[in-house]
Length: 380
Ligand code: SF4
Image (cartoon, rainbow, N blue to C red):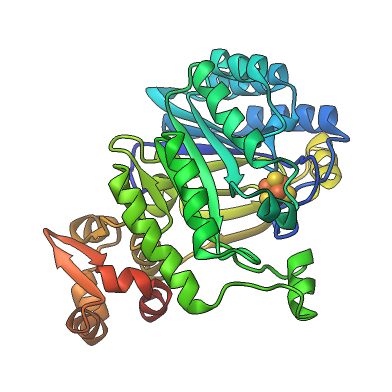
């Protein structure tokens, strides 16, 4: 027997809101470039919430998308109320919502704060208008900065900004400028992802036609090196491969994912992980609504990993965090001794200074963090 809950006594809730102003050129998430059918969607999600249950209190609720703020604040408040009525939450639960600039004004943000959201994740991506245009983002750099200022005014004290590097035509100079502007806004949290070209997106087609001038590998490494330095100087700690936070502002909802914990997934395309089974909901609003209305199963995929596969997955996801994975926790959860299990592979990766074991935690070294995918491929 094994327990798939990172922290055995808590769970998170993710609610997917699949509407956007328009599709960005790099996006492969399930979302629609409008909010047609949103009333039918709201009714279906309410019903799904009513049918969900967990024996654990929620430590986090995350409204993501899509662009959750495509829905009226009143609808978001009602949805959050329903989540809190259906589940017990710990007293200081982290309640996040993703916000895109150009979709909110001050009254909207005040309404979200009053509704009980206590953390914002703002999709900025870049502070260069030309880069934003190429990404197909429906906002300017100034819109993004203004959203952060309004969020402060509305009383939010836990604000995360999402940024991307390795963008088409981006240079080290424009990236540093984006980062400087982000840091001037004094966010508590930064998520900084390298652009990846996903199949089926406009960027993938442009790349195939040779029309996507991405920075070369050396420039990308320089951007990453500058990022570490600038973010460190601003007082944010890297706590996950792509995430940085002021002390105490690490995203609890995402830490639960990286610890391979349990979470409820609500809405079309949402993923849930409960009692060792990972389920993915159908990625189509109409189909999702039809299935809910007719009392049918919304899950289009279900997978239950056997114990060793779940152990390896927990190691690999856990290594994304700079604290690493606790060997004792792994043993308690899976009854597997990681050192004995990985044997020579682990010894070699430690000898190569890619991994280290410190105070009972297996973690990537600074060099290992640069080659994380290669190291993880050996342990998966
Ligand atoms: S706003 Fe986010 S979810 Fe919507 S299209 Fe752009 S990247 Fe995708």
